[in-house]
Image (cartoon, rainbow, N blue to C red):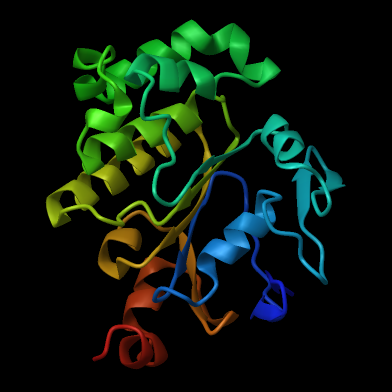
Length: 233
């Protein structure tokens, strides 16, 4: 359980990720997706429950750890709204993503990969991030998270404020990074059709609870509850 002050947002939520999966959290705005992600990243403290990360058969409890400690364990967040440093250049924003100690030795290699994966950023690496379009800023935010050399990439509402064409490009880039580097991805997203395009599994959240778990994209797409409650079919 978790919330903000006296307002309880999450109620008995249980989700899990396996290594190498892309798992999506689906649901309309205000149903607890971002709160769940903020709990995972140490930005919100759950009032009950545990968050566990298992590496090589050893479980580590994340509940109560600082966000910095969680990032140091190889979990990177692409936050809702991008949260770039607008008065720094694209290159400077990306280099800040490699702040954690484990990412520094691969900084040059990862920067080169980011510029290969996002050619527009290579062309504009000296441009101030705040002067870019929303879609370009989202690319910077994703690349910045990748610069931390993560094992798990957590993406919160990447489609917010973007055109349909740019949403498709952003979602595709997330999948490209995942496949190329064997990442595990947890993505909260309102755009159902784009999210399930890259999903291995997914959860539909309604009023702070998991209302349905789909074991693959087809199960999410074809379930009667999802079609009625979420897709309006």
